Image 1 (cartoon, rainbow, N blue to C red):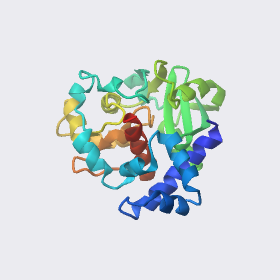
Image 2: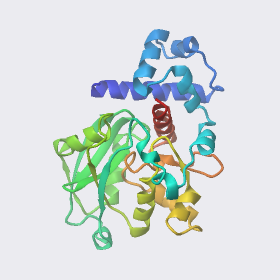
Image 3: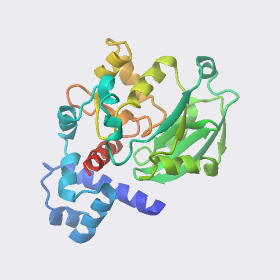
Length: 280
C-alpha cells in the first residue's frame, strides 16, 4: 500500500464517520457508497482492504454507541490483561515496544541538550508528525483534524529547549514498523519524555491490548492513586506518542469517549480500526 493509498483510506473512513454520525448506523451499502460517490463494489473493496471486514460489520464500530459496547464487552483491567494473555491475542497491532523514560532531571531541562529529529509521514490515520531521538520515537501527532502547522507547534512546545532537526530518514524504519501490519516481533523503540506521574500513566496505557479499552478510574487504581482520576485524564491527554502509547483506548466510566488531543474523529477511527481488526 502506498502512502497516498493510506491517506486516501483514512479520508474515506473520516467521511463515512461523518455520514454515520447523523444516522442510526443503518445505511445500506448502496446508500452509503452513493453518498461517498463510489460504486458499491469499489466501496466494499476499500472497506475490506482497510479493516478486513465488510462495511456492514464495520458500521457497528462507527456508531455513537461503540464506546459503551467496548466497555461492556472489551473492558479489561490492567492488573489482569497481561496475565490472561490478551496482549497476544490480536492478529494485528499488538506491537512489541522497547521503551525507556527520560530521567526527572532530564525532563526538568525541557529538552536542553537534546536533538530531536522530525518528519512527516502518511499513516492509516492521515498525516502524522513523528519525532524521535537516537534512543527512540518521542512524539507522534496526527494532523488530519488539527492541521500540520498546529501539530508542529504543539509537539515543539513540549520540549522548547531541544534542537529540532528535520530528518525523516532517521525515523523511517521505526515508523514503518509502527504502522505496518507485519511489524509484530520487531522492536519499535520509544523514548518517553514526561514527568514521573505522567510516565506511570503512559506505562499503564501500554498494557491495554489492541481492541480493548480501559476507564480512567481503572488507570488511577492501577498506578496506586485511585482518587487521582482527573489528574490521570490530564496525563492521558498529554501523552506525546499517540497510537503507540494508546491513549485512545482510555474511556470514561459512563461510556463516553472522553477527549482526544488530535480530534475526536481520529480517536473514533482508531478505536473502530482496532476493534474491527481484532475480530479477524
